[in-house]
Image 1 (cartoon, rainbow, N blue to C red):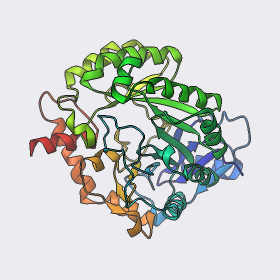
Image 2 (cartoon, rainbow, N blue to C red):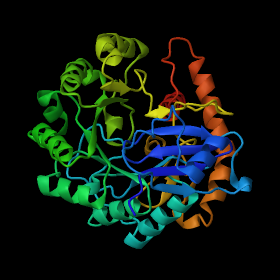
Image 3 (cartoon, rainbow, N blue to C red):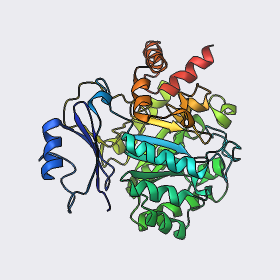
Length: 390
């Protein structure tokens, strides 16, 4: 069976993910019952527009495992399959290039995917390094698809040929996020001559195979003005662009004075005002970021703008579990390792009540009270600031 809806039980009702569009919304208990019993969605649901029967993957969560002030489990896990990469970009957050000796085995990753699916995860994004260098990538995507999860891929795009795109489609890949850091001259200056063309070709191959695409651009002082020009080009092509802040970590630690100030972000926001307000093809950190969420109902807790720890987990090639990859790259302690987890639901519940997570959010409040500092909800950005002050 090919599922097109994924639903996870929550304290308030349920989290609904449309596996066709990748859009997420929330329903109350009565609405959840109507969906499960009658296959009937609320009239204002974004899911009701699927032109076929709703084949639902429903993850039932015991009342004892539901969380009063949060979600029953993470929405997405970013699994770094490998640190191997065919490029050595100067701004790489985790110093990718070579495969780690302690990389998770094929069996460990397949068991991990199954366990996360049972716990209520809705999406897996395979990243790296360059995940296309992992010989079992298609197997992992196929397994994710068979389990009724949404599968996505983070790639530099340079290895993505027409044949690769077709194989990704056959395995069930729903979305690909391709890294392009500006117009051709600027991108090739950062990532190597000829790579802009390869990455854009990858986008067209993916689109041809009905795989949703998004471009990720890393915004630095050195490419700030160029990114503005690039964003306008992408907007005209009607391709979604997410502009990500640069954080000094990994190989990027050597790029000093490239993190943007509040003044810089205000300049970028103003320069992109037309693109941000019309069409919806440009968003990003400090700019606009709706995360594809359509809340619909009032929740008993606040959805945090930073997914780390509340809606997302990051798993490193060696199995270490982090709140996000950017915190991991700054040597923030792992919260556990996959080999230590015997009950993922219990792990998640304990994480929500942990001092480690509450301390991070306390640091966020302290950071945002510093005069002249860009207000942020990014835990990794705050950690970088605190590291520099120590």
